[in-house]
Length: 175
Image (cartoon, rainbow, N blue to C red; front, top):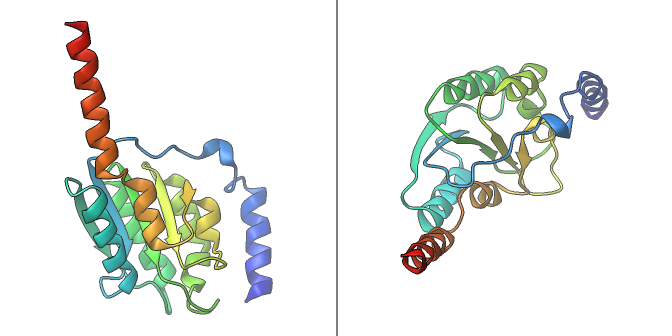
């Protein structure tokens, strides 16, 4: 599997899928997020808790998909395509860690191309470091854990409130 990983990685790199110049920035103030993962994943609970704590105002839609096993790569790509067609500002692709076999769906060539074509920025939060997948190399941003992916996408509530306060102070001073 590792040899297959390296060959596919070299192929995708030659096709330009890892080019950092094509990566999109995450929205500064997202209003809606999509999460592509398994509804049974413990990682999903962590992501939802983090989002609720940091940005309780965000609209969140979950796109359920198997995240391992035969055909999971295609199903993840299909869920990612659906999420990209929604009104979300960013997508979190997440799964907890595991062996190379467990994470193999995230090394799917079709999934890599789907990530590259996504109309909205995608954050990969697959596994804790040192787990690496091809999806992480193609995604617009990579987080070391699913929880960190949620933190990247959702600025803390305090930052939003502070920005609002500073704006109000500037308006007051202008008046």
